[in-house]
Length: 250
Ligand SMILES: Nc1ncnc2c1ncn2[C@@H]1O[C@H](COP(=O)(O)OP(=O)(O)OP(=O)(O)O)[C@@H](O)[C@H]1O
Ligand SMILES: [Mg+2]
Image 1: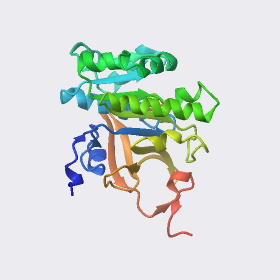
Image 2: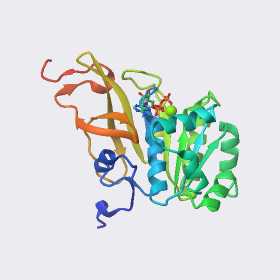
Image 3: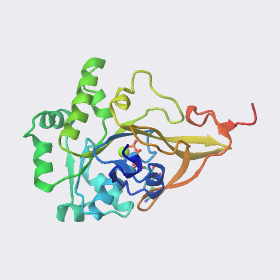
Image 4: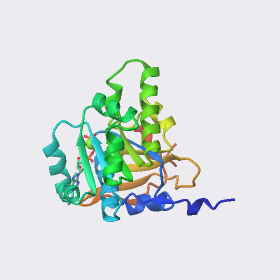
């Protein structure tokens, strides 16, 4: 039987997360990073692309954000000169709208395929797939869009991170709004956690197909160069439903 520890990995650039993942994301996997506003989704996504640049693995960021300058500026605040990586041919930041992006994805000779062929991209970040939810009210259509997206990224041989917004600030999970989590190979949640009158941030890996991974919820902070993971939360229940309390205080 193949040793799963030796499955080729794509390190995320977040050391603590890579340890939790047994070395990184599995090559070719599609990972959803789901989180509340401001929890660091874009930061973790860029950290993954920058790590690729540093390893000579080119990457693409597809963003539906409306202000390109702000995207570069925010990255600069985190210590990343994205334009420099673009000049070196290691990164392409594509500011798009969801409809044009999806059109370019369907076609095997489409825009994303061109980018992959042109720059030899290995990694891709989609910031964020929540924009597709605004294109349709029909769950079947949305599921088809999301399935086509994941299949197209795999067809191109890309290891991908899809960001997904969670509208709840503390805890919660929108009913019927988690389809993409089933399609993806791996699912990571980022959350604010209210604990002893403080708001902390916590990360958990909910699933990773065909691989072992750490199951605990770890604290993290955002610093220059991205997310830094700390210790697991100990002896606390209800962290991810917004009702954290000492587990022994039932
Ligand atoms: N240089 C920095 N040093 C410390 N913290 C930072 C730095 N830059 C950003 N942050 C923190 O990261 C947070 C935003 O991170 P990011 O934009 O990655 O979140 P997000 O989950 O993508 O947000 P949104 O849901 O709005 O897209 C900020 O609110 C701030 O707390
Ligand atoms: Mg963001």
